[in-house]
Length: 96
Image 1 (cartoon, rainbow, N blue to C red):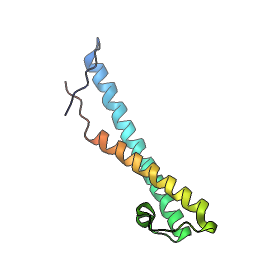
Image 2 (cartoon, rainbow, N blue to C red; image 1 turned 30 degrees about the vertical axis):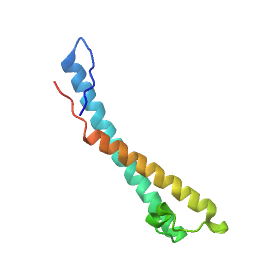
Image 3 (cartoon, rainbow, N blue to C red; image 1 turned 135 degrees about the vertical axis):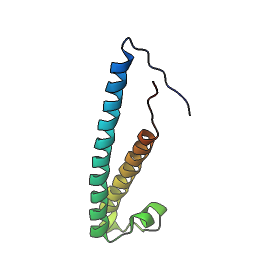
């Protein structure tokens, strides 16, 4: 792992502020993941498609469903991005 250095006149206060910010961001990410996952499930049910199949390219884009499928693909991409951010934060540690 690599380190990032922060220079500050008050290291203890900065450490507490950073730790609090990270924890709040983790909470916001968890909430966003839950909402996005719920939206993915709703769209998948409405469109009667398997999200994994859609990601794999196994679902044909019928003209009647094209906009819905595009929306679902967008939500899946957002979910992937949010989970990636969550994983990064989970591996983050603040050293004193």
